Image (cartoon, rainbow, N blue to C red):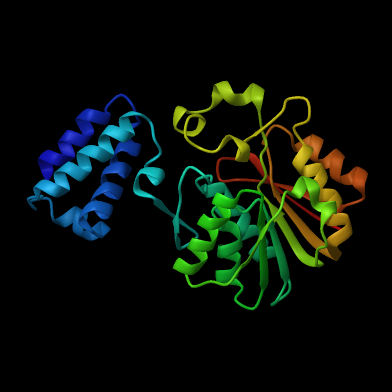
Amino acid sequence: MQPVIQYIEKELNGLYPSEEIKAFIRIIFEHVCGFSYTQFITTRDKILSHAEKETIERIVIRLKMFEPIQYILGETEFYGLRLNVNPSVLIPRQETEELVQWILETNWLKSPAILDIGTGSGCIALALQKELPAAEVNAVDFSVKALETAHGNAQKNRLQVNFIESDILKWRHRKWENFDVIVSNPPYVRELEKEKMQPNVLEFEPATALFVSDSDPLIFYREISKFALKYLQNNGFLFFEINESLGKEMIRLLSGLGFKKITIKRDLNNKERMLCCQR
């Protein structure tokens, strides 16, 4: 086992930070060999089979092309859930877990009607359903492939969420129920910000879930907010994950539409990444 660890370290050295390489090694052995963290630490003398070595070599080759390890392995963890992921959905991030936690801390109802807009893998909707089993959770996305992934994740985790295929920019074309909580992590990365992004994000994750034009970067926030004016209950909560550079613009947008108690929260990296307001 130790020679394989050294092989991974040698192949990935210079491509990723050393701490990330250590995390890759632990995740790879968990996935390929079924090791728990404790087993990984205490079983360094295990001799791997030929098939296990070949599987690890294939994973390393893809990592050297900067393919996200979550796509390589086909799964990730989010808020205590094991979720399938693929290039049709964004890989759930830590800051989105923080957004879920904020919703859970803020919500005052035991059985709220919740709508997750742009659900992707279903991570937000499923985490909320898991933590609020009496809630009625709905999730919408325009991507059929994303919804297939989200539905599979619901079945995998034995959770009931109502998935809806719809383009939220065309929300006026159909009827909707009223909701106590609306949450969205919509596309918010401006084209001008592409050059700052890592290749594993830029080349592999779905562009439609990431990017907006420089000329109208708040297009999704504006339409979702207008939707919320019509379908969010009085004093209901609207939560967003936001672009850290557009907090002031978001406040102007929402205050102009009449929302109250607009609050921006920083994530663990001290970036303005979350917003909450009330109708």
